[in-house]
Image 1: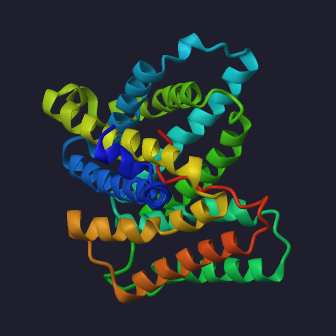
Image 2 (image 1 turned 60 degrees about the vertical axis):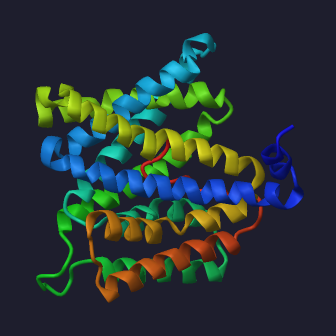
Length: 303
């Protein structure tokens, strides 16, 4: 047995690895999404979304081979809804990135899972978190008419992505009893069927350019296959409440990725807005009963 294997089996290392996997997944997703934005000049946001979702679907079909699993007609209907919502979530998010920074888009989109988490809450503290999240969104919205404000269309697309992310959580739970690998593969296939027509309409035959396909494959692997594989590792060992808190840092990681990869600089007010939304998300999870604290999966997810 190698020294590396022995090291991985020590209690301290074994306890740290799931958290390293979670952090690695979030960093990979944000970096992959930032890299995806470099495809916009070539195929546009819809074409980029089509490449990511379509190539991810092909990869997952080859890996999990869902045709070996037995699904009923009712299962397939539920998977079609799940996949359709997933596809629209991805498309809306990539359209938002066309005009607003990554960190801001993630912060707005995170209102989706936050709303789901708070929907059945009746404790006073939960309304405090809602108010803080609304304050954060208010700081992000272009209300003062200055040149530095955010594009309202981009904000609207991010808000739509938030709605679809909430739907993804709701409909994802309805198929969570099915085999996970096959479920994600079929769901992503339905997502591709939803998104790819928009990509073809926007980018046409350029989607088949070998260079663009190669870049799209990198996007699909880095922003889909790798982060969600790491998430699977994390979810096996990290408590749901802790996972929900940790993933609330996505907007900040996205903002840093946008800064270093794309040179997207945020104003102090926008950083404060993102901090307010993250605080609201963390607070909502920490003050929810343990049976309500569900893992909030990553934006643009899942693949």
